[in-house]
Amino acid sequence: MAWVEAASMSHSRAFHQILPRSASAVLAIGGLESNQTCHKSIEEFETTTGVWTDLGDLLLEARAEFCAVESKDKFYIVGGFRYNNHHNINKVKRPSGYNRLNF
Image 1 (cartoon, rainbow, N blue to C red):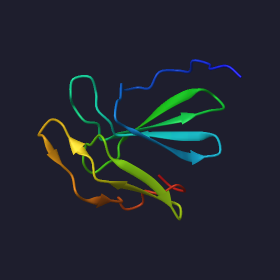
Image 2: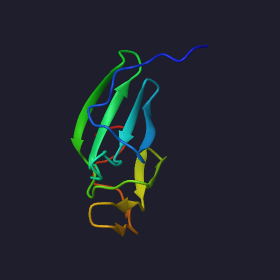
Image 3: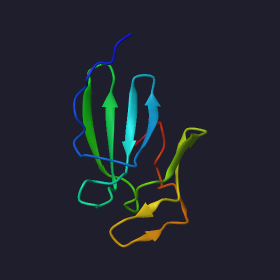
Image 4: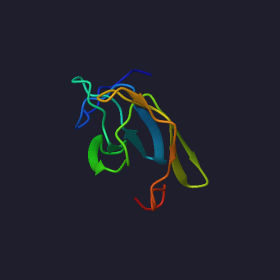
C-alpha cells in the first residue's frame, strides 16, 4: 500500500478536525490558516472523485484546536481556541440542521 497525493483543500488548515460524512466522504472542519486566522468553513472531500468542495462558513464561531464528534447522526463541535482574539471557547455547538444526513 502506498500513499497517493490528492487534490489540495480550498483553504490551508492546521489544528482542524476531520470527520466522516459518509462511506466515501470526509469533512475538514475549522482550523487555523497560516495568517493566524481561524476558519468558520467546512470542506468535503469525496474519496471516489478526489475532489474537495467548499461547503461555506457553517460554524457559528471560527475556531481551531477543538474536538469534533458525531453521535446519533449529528455533529458536535466542542471547545477550541480563537487565535485572532486570543481566547478559549468553552461551549458545545450544534447548529440547527447540522447533521450527517442534511447539511
